[in-house]
Amino acid sequence: MFLQNATPAETAELTTPTGLKPSGGARPIIEFERVTVSYGRDAAATQALAESTFRIDHGDFIALVGPSGCGKSTILKLVGGLLKASGGHVFVARREVGAEDVRIGMAFQNPTLLPWLSIRDNVMLPLKIARPFREEWRQKRKTEYRDRADALLAKVGLQDFANKFPWQLSGGMQQRASLCRALIHDPTLLLLDEPFGALDQFTREELWATLQTLWMERRPTVLLVTHDLRESAFLANRIMVMSARPGRILVDEQVDFPRPRTLDTTYQPEFTSLTHTLRSLIVAARSGAGAPS
Amino acid sequence: MRAVNREKLASAALIVGVFVLWEVSCLVFGISEIILPRPSQIIATLIDRWPALMPHAVQTLYTTLVGFALGVGAGVVIGLLIGSSRLAYNVAFPLLVGFSSIPKVAVVPIFVLWFGSGTVPAVLTSAIICVFPVVVNMATGLATTEPELEDVLRTLKASKRDILLNVGLPRAMPYFFASLKVAVTLSFVGTVISETVASNRGVGNMMLIASSNFNVPLVFAGLFILAGLGVALYVIFSLIERRVTGWANRKTEFAGG
Image (cartoon, rainbow over all chains, first blue to last red; front, side, top):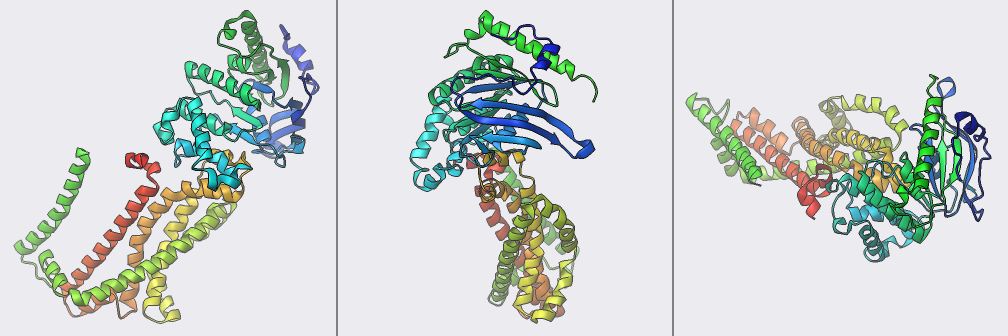
């Protein structure tokens, strides 16, 4: 099932941009074609993302893992239209990024809630902005949309905090609210940038289960950036391991544990051996980048 | 709550204390009312001459409010233009600093030259003096908006206008109100200067005439009127500020309502 004992030499072979596996119905939602990203200009430019080509299918759950600074977040920002590629093409739903007719929900490393809005209003924000919801914002913001936000907040245990302001909530609660905001408009594409990074172990595991349930109910395509290997193995259908900067995809692997996965899954030997292998891959990737540039 | 009340009591006591000290020192050192009238004399003059003073006070208040409204309006527009783009902010800032460092008193003769004496130059002086604090604060508020907050909207395919209305403006509100409190007091300065130089109405003009007649208590009565008006407007804007931007100070009463 997995590339056991992959050495850096072997993984290097896998960096060819064809290391893709067809995953079920081949209906791609995200396609990267020889995409590169560099910051700065000319001589001073640092390459954040080496030429990358891959595709992601509708309804899949992808985890991007790798050493810090390897361009994981860069990939998310490209897909979310927050960053322009320096070279190559990013397609979302077969259209050049930005032109696509796909609803995107994004949760960031920090909760990034707007401090002047109540938690409920923060969660409702996408309904005010994103099509097709914005057309009916005026009519429905006090009825249907409000109920929708409250229902989602209840799902993550924040029903009593809808009228509070972000600063009145703990970091974990803010993060949960931010997850609600990413989901409220029923996005086809969910981009999660280390959303649980700042949380304690127990809250994190709780939210894994919540996220899995939400994913199984609605089946959005999820792209999750994380450096928690257990998290990636617990949540994802497919794990992409990236090398150190400039980032490239080293390994692209399916995870076949049956769903719904529980915390017990994480203590099974297959699970442990998977995370262990991932770990050694990333350690190898880090040391490969150890040479001063 | 008790601590807050104690603070309020203390500041009231300080105000009363200053006036008492003033009154007592004038009596003890036998200071002539031509030099420094006692507060009791000033208040007596104020009450005594109120029918004559009131039209001047109304004139000054009116001029100031019109000028303030114009100045703030212009300030908001310029601030939005400059603050909504980093390029505009960097390019325009040196010019703004140059303009704002001109002493505004110096422009009064020019306005008088252009518009004659009277209400118009007073309104304009009052307006121009409060433009800059508003521009600088609005622009700073907008320009320092966290890019992460804008990213939230950009992933939702928000237009520039959406971002300005939903992130930029609310984010700039605390800066805006801070500048309003500065602007409203400056606005009085502008009006009074212009009234003193070129007008036949208003508190500034009244004070000028009173001082040339050596009616010093009346001059001070004018000062008291100005202080009263200034404080009143400051309080009004503070109250509005507290309602609108309580989130920035994490006010509990804001959270409740």
